[in-house]
Length: 274
Image 1: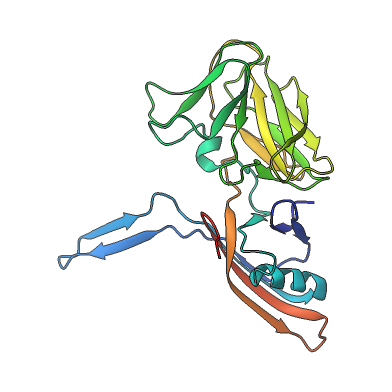
Image 2: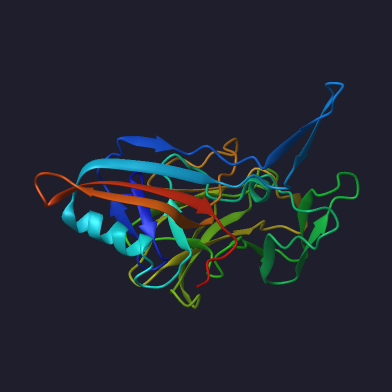
């Protein structure tokens, strides 16, 4: 189940069930420091911190080591890769889970999926967004920030979605399952604040969907999407599921050649070409 590390291209994720000997998930904050002769400091930082992962295993079995080797050498294409970090719980993007987006945007982190409705920015809090349901069956979907199909998933996984706190008790929580090409396959829904469902065969992505069930305007803050049976909690901040690329790799055979000592470094990327 997803509480181990899963890595690979969407539609072909593989579980790494052996615990890593070392594991560092510190983000690259993108901070550059400048210090004047008088001692005053100025910092310049990038708009978004970049996720990094560094993992190493001792005595990894040959099949798993070979799989990681193929990913590192880009034997099946450049990527990027999906990495389901077992320490990440809420897989919505941090701002998305908080109902936020860039001020002045059209709320591109969401899209209306059924019946009249609109995503609108708050008139009082810049960058805070809400959903205007213009019919009882108006539906809103959480857009995949990186993957066109939504959030990467594997058939047999348990996925759970909790709607934003402000949605009324008449709401419906839903998850849409999509193929590797992003085509719709099926849905699971329940008239409740949250839903838990199994990813069906053939599905490679999941898209969370919510229906308020009543006309009105509702804040999009405090949504949560989890995998592996984790309880979706409105207080869980978003971790996201960004695409990553392997930037460093080592493969050291042991005395027993069927086992290898392997380490990989991964970096969050906007794309991977080559």
